Image (cartoon, rainbow, N blue to C red; front, side, top):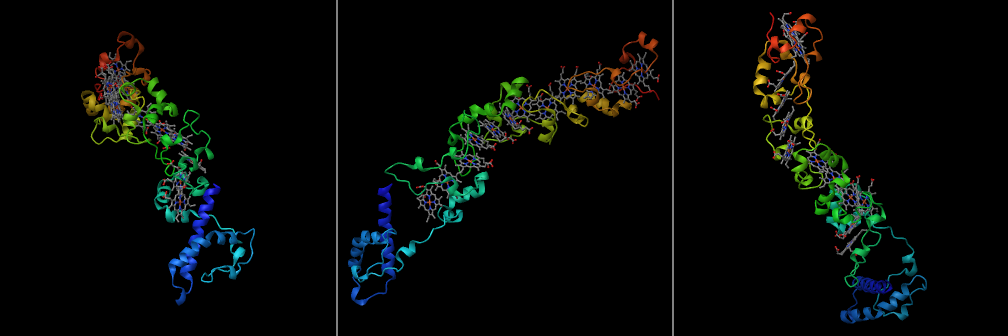
Length: 319
Ligand code: HEC
Ligand code: HEC
Ligand code: HEC
Ligand code: HEC
Ligand code: HEC
Ligand code: HEC
Ligand code: HEC
Ligand code: HEC
Ligand code: HEC
Ligand code: HEC
Ligand code: HEC
Ligand code: HEC
């Protein structure tokens, strides 16, 4: 560390002196720039010493090469507390990082230096890149529990933290973070449990929601996915539930029944399929809705209502 600082000061020293040279009024008798530069390099360590705030004494012009212009001020120049760089100033050089954070940084749109406590100290010789980079643990405490210590495996770019890579680790662990869907698939076995992996549906990127029509034909043309989901919860698609207003879907598989129901002159045509068949395949009792339609003696003799009413979807009508 000490070593590096010294080198930096030397470089800075040369820089400031270079500036001083180029700013000095040109003296016809002292145009030998090569000589000046050589002198500057020689003088640099001495100058640095003279700028040391602790030992500050005014610069003695007699002890300095007379061709040099030294900015007046000495210790006064250093009597200041520089403000830290703003995000905007970092961005002037690191435009692409800035744009990533700006457009896709989510809740990481905090000050660069909240994370980068140490920076501009990478040294290929020390191979210290990882060492000086911010650690997630500076601020986060196991947000997913202790099973996921290697944050960068999934959050590959900290400047866009929600762009999670869909890698093997993530795919193997869906159910560990999302117990709901995983449990539901097990509890209600269907071909989605046995034939389709989480990431076959949730493909391409984490959080992607697929359309059913990537893999299925709809029952009815232009049926929106919201309707599919209303009948088939996707992680338990055999747990079908539906309400009134879904008759056209029933019709795609039960065309004959639908036809006789739809064209029936009876008042059953005003009763929704779903009101009688409350779950798929269930057959209702007439008594669910009709309590005492006939003389009990007659019903004791003829207990099956449909012996007389024949077709429940289109019962004969008494005009
Ligand atoms: C939430 C913490 C966080 C914030 C905020 C953040 N960084 Fe970083 N940055 C990191 C981490 C962690 C790495 C190391 C990434 C790696 O290991 O590849 C990094 C790497 C870098 C790098 C070197 C690698 C590269 O991508 O070029 C630069 C330059 C950088 N950040 C600049 C910035 C600037 C400029 C800002 C503000 C506009 C900023 N960072 C904001 C955490 C952060
Ligand atoms: C005057 C231009 C400039 C400014 C301003 C600047 N940087 Fe840099 N920065 C560089 C250059 C040049 C590099 C080295 C090349 C590279 O990695 O892009 C660098 C490298 C980095 C690195 C990676 C290497 C390392 O040693 O840390 C980080 C992190 C970084 N800068 C963060 C910041 C942050 C944070 C700010 C604002 C507080 C900032 N920089 C302001 C020019 C600048
Ligand atoms: C300087 C502190 C700091 C560091 C270091 C840091 N984060 Fe964050 N991170 C935050 C804050 C603050 C939030 C917002 C938290 C909140 O609002 O609840 C956040 C949010 C996030 C989010 C959610 C982002 C969003 O938009 O919802 C992810 C993912 C995340 N961090 C991952 C990481 C990873 C991975 C690392 C290490 C590479 C890291 N963070 C390093 C401070 C930090
Ligand atoms: C197996 C992959 C994986 C690993 C490893 C991982 N994360 Fe995440 N993390 C995710 C996913 C996926 C999300 C959800 C992203 C989204 O909302 O789209 C997430 C979300 C987050 C969030 C936001 C949480 C919220 O509720 O909004 C934070 C913060 C976070 N991660 C931090 C971390 C930190 C810190 C580590 C390391 C200790 C880490 N993650 C390790 C995959 C991972
Ligand atoms: C390390 C934990 C973690 C892992 C592993 C993980 N997720 Fe997530 N996932 C999250 C977090 C956190 C969120 C955002 C918060 C939420 O909605 O629960 C999220 C969000 C989602 C969403 C969006 C939810 C919505 O309401 O829009 C889907 C879909 C999703 N994950 C699917 C998956 C799938 C599929 C996998 C496996 C390939 C997976 N996740 C792996 C943590 C994780
Ligand atoms: C057949 C395709 C398919 C399979 C297989 C599948 N999903 Fe989903 N998943 C979806 C669809 C579609 C949605 C949107 C559901 C909605 O909006 O009601 C969804 C929603 C989600 C959500 C967000 C809503 C919620 O219920 O929390 C998470 C998280 C999720 N799935 C995780 C998983 C996990 C984990 C697995 C594997 C264990 C999995 N999914 C398997 C298609 C699938
Ligand atoms: C990634 C492809 C994929 C997506 C997306 C998908 N499915 Fe499937 N689904 C399948 C496969 C594969 C089967 C097994 C039968 C087959 O080959 O058709 C299946 C079977 C089904 C079954 C019959 C289940 C059984 O056990 O009999 C229903 C119902 C179903 N899907 C509904 C849906 C609905 C609703 C959606 C959208 C919310 C959807 N699926 C999204 C691939 C998918
Ligand atoms: C009104 C409810 C309802 C709606 C809306 C609905 N389905 Fe179905 N779906 C069913 C019923 C009932 C079955 C038959 C289940 C059985 O055979 O036990 C079924 C069966 C399926 C099957 C099994 C294969 C087959 O054709 O027999 C798939 C796949 C399917 N639906 C996908 C979808 C998709 C995709 C959508 C949206 C475009 C959708 N469903 C909308 C009720 C519905
Ligand atoms: C994708 C095709 C499909 C759709 C859509 C569909 N069904 Fe079915 N339905 C079937 C199949 C297949 C059977 C089983 C037939 C068998 O076992 O002989 C069945 C059986 C039935 C049964 C029981 C039949 C019996 O003999 O016990 C009723 C009642 C029924 N469905 C009503 C409905 C209603 C109401 C709807 C609309 C909400 C509907 N179905 C939508 C395919 C479908
Ligand atoms: C008023 C109540 C009622 C209504 C409304 C109704 N059903 Fe039924 N459905 C029944 C009863 C009761 C049976 C059993 C008939 C039998 O045992 O012969 C039945 C039988 C069925 C069957 C199996 C026997 C067959 O005829 O194929 C299917 C399929 C069916 N209904 C579909 C539907 C559909 C689709 C609708 C709407 C278009 C519908 N039902 C409307 C009461 C109703
Ligand atoms: C979900 C309720 C429900 C079920 C179950 C039901 N019905 Fe009905 N039924 C009705 C309604 C509502 C009417 C119209 C009566 C009214 O408006 O007062 C009706 C009317 C009738 C009529 C007179 C039709 C006409 O237009 O003249 C007959 C006959 C009938 N039902 C027979 C039956 C038989 C037989 C069964 C059993 C196989 C049955 N119903 C099951 C609701 C139901
Ligand atoms: C022996 C034949 C027979 C049997 C069995 C029978 N019905 Fe009827 N039902 C009729 C006749 C005929 C009518 C029309 C004359 C009438 O209004 O009494 C009728 C009418 C009805 C009506 C219409 C009443 C109105 O107000 O318009 C309903 C509802 C009804 N039956 C329900 C049932 C139910 C439910 C059963 C079984 C419990 C049943 N029926 C058994 C012959 C029968």
